[in-house]
Length: 462
Ligand code: PA5
Image 1 (cartoon, rainbow, N blue to C red):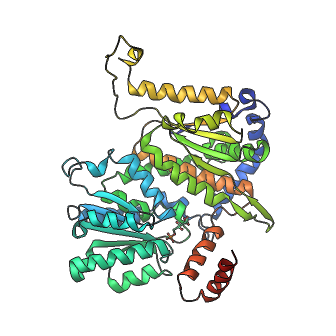
Image 2 (image 1 turned 120 degrees about the horizontal axis):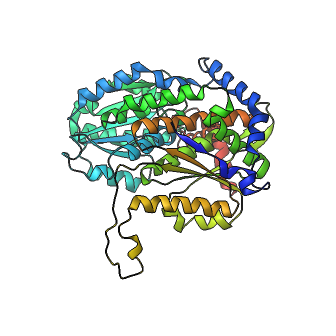
């Protein structure tokens, strides 16, 4: 199981001003945490609670269908092109970067065991879209369009461009190069898919985008790329069972949620830095940023009071950021909690050759890059602690499907518990919807005429 070490967030180590008396905090919040966990588990099947993501580990049906589809199309496509944004892209980006062989798209077909390359379009920069479409042979590309709402302007405009090009190249057979994942009834993509006859996977009700990585949103691309989704889901299920424990002393998601909440609200550490010491986990930080930011930052609390709260997530990468942001983390404002992710065993042990022994770098020879990575992680941790900066270490045994399932699910539960501690709804995103609505209005979507008029006035005033 994943391990959590929060010793360096304790006042004994980083001082009263910067750390917590963790034992007391756990005791004080023991009952509240038990209530939160019980309530989340009781509410998870109720419609409208947006907690269906807690059941995704057990959705055998989806796992079966994505595997069936993946085996049906195996060998037919050289490329998978994912069109999606936010929660409809970040999870798949994080997991594929972690679990596929490094530099996957540059490997030969043989080195990829005949599996496709993977590309994501999660933005609408016209140069990037055009650049990618110029290099992809669309005839050999499976386009996986993902949007829960079915109407997100970024994703749907990309889709319209790609669909037209596909149709130009393939005629009416183009539809076999498209697979959609969307809401089962409400969205426009669902309607288009039915009309045009695309293979479609349903994103279950009450699963928000940022909690959807273990639905078809993630599972479909993972299956197409040969990622071991059974093992991943075993990781999710094992973590789910562990996190059903209502005792904070036994529940790492509750521990990390409470520590973050108290460090923010009592000690002014409102920035949560995610810093894996593994390049393969670098997009896990992007995924975490969205999860933490979109879930916990809210204008109003559950009682309807204006609170404007929310911890700020920040990403960093070890060891790279030791030569960049660490200066800020060590000596800048003491307003952060740093989360290290440590990988106990890398797949590779890479020895540094014993050369240049007569120079000042001779000491490196004969050691491994693994030793160096660990030494850097240890030294950063010690330095931060010397500077009295609270830090937490999450250790995973290795980067594999099982551990990634555990890790991501642990962060999801941690976020849900933190939402309850802050007293806000962690599962809505009115700020995101507001921006989406303004975009619809500016682009002339029917039904948004009044907003468009107000916006025009506001824009001409500035
Ligand atoms: O987490 C969320 O709900 C959002 O980030 C969405 O995933 C994002 O806005 C994309 O929405 P959709 O999947 O409806 O296109």
